[in-house]
Image (tube, one colour):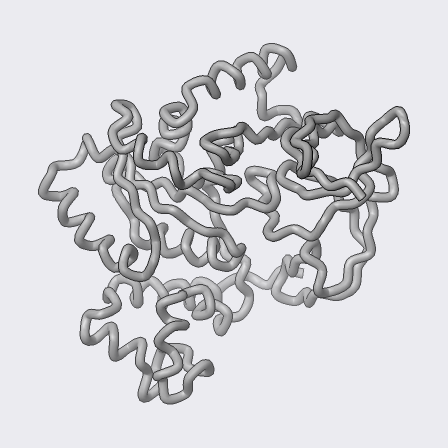
Length: 318
């Protein structure tokens, strides 16, 4: 049984890398892969609406970049015969088994948003993704304002998130990022205009040239065809796209939200109602006490309450 991971996909051709030998090969996908019977525990089976519960289904599954697969090279054409369970599965970019996401936020233009930060962090936790916070455009903000931002972000450092401050155009702060890519598959995320492409080009100047060559070879815009590729970088891989910017909750019940706040989970055992506490109006809530004593920032708690309302107001989808 030979295992590989998918490094590149153009249409229905896959570049796979053998996990033992490192050998690269071009492979197709065996036809029976297209439809798989999935039970409710399968990593390929996702709840997509509030009314839909996970159940045994037969759906079409295609290999994607980042997948770990089993392949057969005993015949003339190398074929992927099985897709192994996914750790996570992103749609934009269309990649699986991501180890970490660089969450890129600009200090200014657009202004830093704690609301957006907390929403990204909730979704990263839900998808079992490890986020690293990158604050870009530090050359465009007044030194005093940058210090205030760093002070406000200290709480996120304290609860375990890594934060780096960079000026991608002048490559300030880029050198200290090198070690975080080792043995990891990394994508970038952030709203439009925060500097994802500039950061990607600062990390990998050769990437822009490569993507231009691909566009020329395909005779059209790179992303108008089904092309996704991983590029080796510092003993890991970076996805070739600047990542995703549109984020929406896939949370259907308000009691799920608190489970994606690691700091809330950590302290909730001291709540009077422990794991059943929603941290809203319950007496003896430890989270509210920590907010009142300024251990947890008021802004983080206020945004949590806004997210509760956002989930409550989601339109029913069938």
